[in-house]
Image: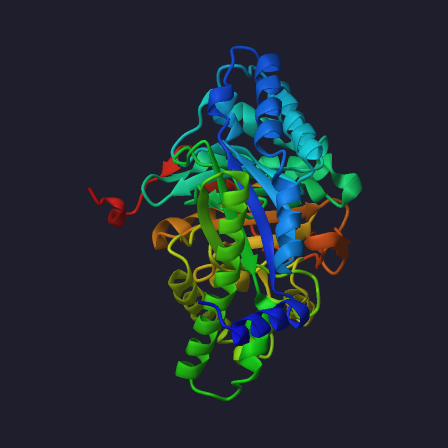
Length: 454
């Protein structure tokens, strides 16, 4: 039972501390849309998305009104398009047509983003995977709402270094293709190791092949709520600190569970997971970096930052799993730069570098996220950064990701403005030394010894 004090407390979280349901994401399987020609396939995809998601936005808005809980985004994820288009697509342009179809369908049903223009290539690439990856720059340049992701490695299979090299080139090509808009295409492109099948957050959401025909996943977020709770226990012991984070995460997850169940019932679609991720926004007071400051570091990036983030991530998960039987997705703490004003301040103060962010990804939920780098960064260096992050995920049996934005025409010390939830970012320095010989090698990095569990 929820008592009146919990209701009052939740209302305060919403009104004063930026608590919201960040997204209701409907996952839709497109496997039954397969067709021998791309025009029929595109028509099948458009029709199924419009049929399944026709009431998604109105349902989310109705729940927000009735319960007084902001539901910020309504989104769709679909089966990785490289799989869906494998029998019909013969050229990169065919996959671009499918991306444009996804975009039209997303506009038709009124969602904020649609994810799943994706390929899963942790061990090797099929011809269809290569075609999709090569189509990404044009696809993201000619669509507005489409998000793309590629899974390049896993603990069980290792890292496909041929795909890593290709993705470095693809990220740079995407930056050039959208150079007139601050290279924003790269903000909708993420690479993964150990990508989850049920992640509701963009840009990495796709509807995994292990999922059913349709599912509702909800992502909640409350960095401001956690920060406010920690302000009341300044100077207390680690035991008190951890208990405070756990209790707060529990309350936030309960809100997400309520919205998820309600959306599932109204839409007649099975409930999947609640993803409890502390996902910041550019709004003041809605920052993971500010939580780290409240825990005790002067700026994100100062000595002790990785330990503070590890504590935060673990306690968030411990609190969340007590509030819902189905916590999934990425669940933990995100550390994007452009979307977190505290992270931006830390970069500008000289406290935070890409190397320190990489160290922090060993213990956070995702990885190097929304980091703007100089537009003249070589593709091989981008591939090297991706390879480093994939290795962290593979060895540590966790999800890691990279969303780098080489901003064409800009260098270190300048700023790029994206607007909205994507925020703005200072251009961060990249290590100038070369990894060309490493990236030129072909094949894959094998899985670690602890992957052999059979």
